[in-house]
Image 1: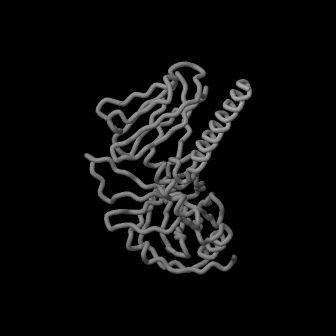
Image 2: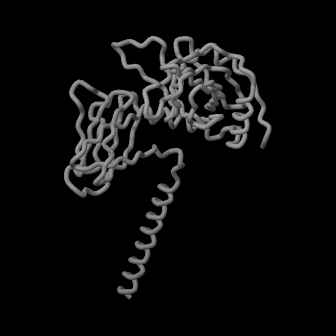
Image 3: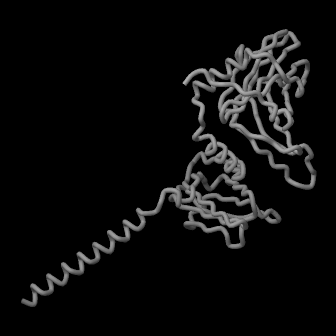
Amino acid sequence: MQRTFIRLLFLFVFLTAGKFLVAQTNAVAGFAKQAYIKQYPVSVNEQLTTVLIFPTPISADGVDLGSTDIIASAIDGVSNILKIKASQPNTSPTNLTVITTDGKVYSFWVSYAVNADSHPIDLRTQQQQEKILASFADRQLTDKQIAELARHIATRKAFLNAAKARSFRIVARLKGIYISSDVLFFKISLSNKTNIDYETDFMRCYIRNKKRSKRTANHEQELKPVYALYTHGQITSGKTEQQVIIALPKFTIADQKNFVIQIFEKSGDRHLSLKVDGNDIIKAESVTPVTN
């Protein structure tokens, strides 16, 4: 009888504990996906130093290491930079949490890698890109519509001739700005007045202040084009001209800022920097997509 009672008591305790564990599991599983802070993967090793650059200063005692497998240290006199590396070879993955003075929490998943990334990581730039991608995630135009509009804009008559950039007889001129739904299109004529072909390596677009102080950091907001069209490919042959259409998520800028389009030559130094004023952007003409 006593043995039966003990068995029943054990079963009761087991079932009660099981219900408690299930309840705890359900509570954890009940967190909304949006409640989780984004965790960035970072690779480290004991030979290289990974540098994290934060938009604002790191709080006092604002660095928490998941384990002693990683080492973190600040730089004297610089409050927004953290250096991290592995304490020994082949360390186990762990987490790193950093809290900045503006109350933001940054989470990192740190793992060991023989070929760890040694490039400094700018969290401000990362956040800017995430914001751009998030704002454009639900865009109204499809990729096909954007491509069709770019080809159509390439054939339209120019109505702007304000912004111009020149480098060793390579000339870029802003010929028009167009808007369709949530996309801005910049039409640029690229002229090669030499006998040496001009091959575009890459383009860079960003917003920056017109006046830049030497005493303060000048933060540039880089914008990633969602589409680029070269009417004759990325080589502008000698003594020719072609149209370049760049599509970006729509934006406007204040009077004290410029939108800058940089074009870099491959295997050369004939780089161009085209500065667009905010007053030109608001002159954008409307265009309508022709395909679904």
